[in-house]
Length: 61
Image (tube, rainbow, N blue to C red):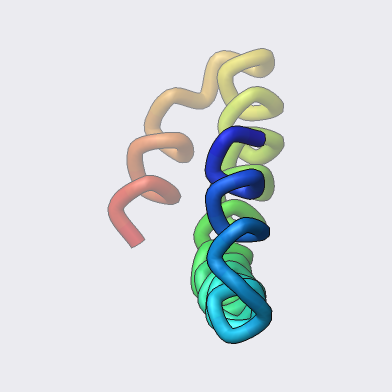
């Protein structure tokens, strides 16, 4: 929130640049987050059925 206050005081060019940078950052971060969430489900299901070998195999793919 403090960063947003600083950017807002700087002017319209800074606001536009901050918006673009934030959007690009979020687009780059999205595949990592989606993969992590998918692996969490995969790992928890296999840990639940005591298949640790599958978890290790899936992690190193």
